Length: 421
Image (tube, rainbow, N blue to C red):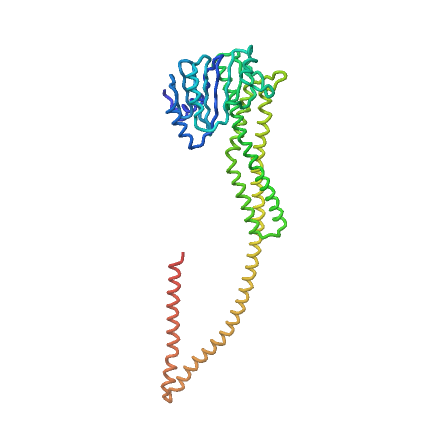
């Protein structure tokens, strides 16, 4: 190989080969269960898968899927999904009761909670279908009966029987074992994804009243904001509480609603791929599936849309409150600035008055200094040494004070320059 291979190339190729169903013979029973597993149950599943499995003659195991087979035709398939695992046993006709019982006990003791469990009986043709229907105990009132891919015919009441399993009867059709396995895999994936999708509906029903209450509370809050009778801080606190409750609901339902949308889309794809053909006077697989799955999926979609709409409304009301609070703060700032301006004007007037008075004080002290000098000069002929000395030191004292103030001022200014950022 001379080219550089992308690190995910082989993963992508392997991914396309995951979920391959084993070949299904013309006469057999298929037992399948889908189990939801919590994160803590994954380790228990690994231990059960590795340490308690029957003795398979062929065994293959990967992180997300595995398979086993015996020489007498028994096949086991395991696949791990995001939140569930699918387990399948293909039990051919003529398999010993011991091998059947051992495999069934291992399958039924698997960790996790069963969300769907079915037994599919595959028969060569429809010649003895009535006998098989009576033996399986399918309800005639709820019977789903139709043709699917390659002439396979299907019967089921899609109910849970006394042993906890659903029942399906399927004819082998005119296809080989591998193609029959792929068709039956579509039938099973349709039912599995249908049940997984429907898990979101009880969640919506459970949180529906809470969402109704939030919508009503938000409407009342919007009215209070419009009327303007309540304090903005109180309104903001109430809106924050509504937003917090909404986030709790979104957190609790986000994964399940997203999964419901994905599962419903996959189920619709599988249903379309089966190319269901209705039979007279019987309910078809399409009618049975769409009768409840489509309304449930749409209800979940509407619930998600309501969550988004309420979040948008909360943002709108929050914006209105923010604008109002901002306008109020701006008005308060304007009043404060006007008050500061009035105070500044008053201080300026007072300063002007003080400066006017300071002129009088300065003139008074200047006259006093001149008087000291004049008295000193006048006391020289009479040798009035006290007046002479005071007059002599007056001008030097003024000069000394001037120089001292200049030095202090220079030091203060230099210090301010050094510490200035």
